[in-house]
Length: 270
Image 1 (cartoon, rainbow, N blue to C red):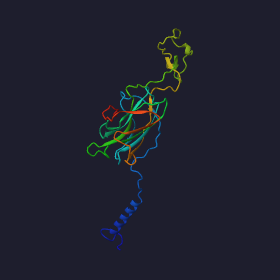
Image 2: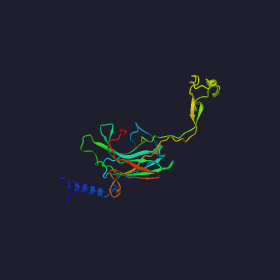
Image 3: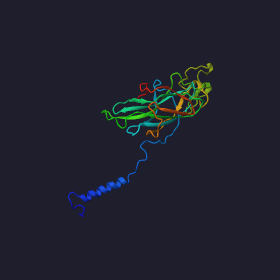
Image 4: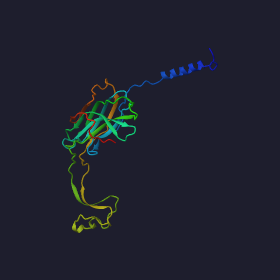
């Protein structure tokens, strides 16, 4: 057999390189899944109020660009969803983010589900299973390539204003804790003899007079929704319930479907 480097082309050297590549392929790890698994996140519900004229606004985002399958499972937690006081509407929606535009375009959505609660301070666990319908990978049909996301959205129903708890107030003088006490103490404040609500003197900087709330842990009337805990790119065998309208499940509360998917409903688009 010819020695390496003595032939032209160097067939022995080329065979050795080819063998090295085959050995590397044999040692290549085999992927166990073809989808994004549930990430590790802090799953805590946060107060949510109306945004931008009570349009749909997103709680969290999952990138679905380039995935092999179009099914997603998303879970989230709610708190303080109370009947007739702080009901919420939720949905999943898919958006196209173009390379050049600063806004996003809604391309598909689930049904709209209204969370109506059943007990005060009940924590609910909610789950979506959905076929988002986005074509796999990048949008090759247009020059302005896009990234696609799935987002958990919420809004406050127009017929259910968020009503805070009633609370007790006290009338008097106030200041910040780091502001020095006025000379002579609170009773030496201007206009004290007349019990007036007049503006305090410039010689009393950082002080005010009026009605002030008493007590802590006063509920502001807002429902709370956590970020979604999601798993995207699942196949039909793993997520058979998924559909274009979305399959919704809730534990610890009550809900009902109120509208069919509608990508034209107003949403916060930035």
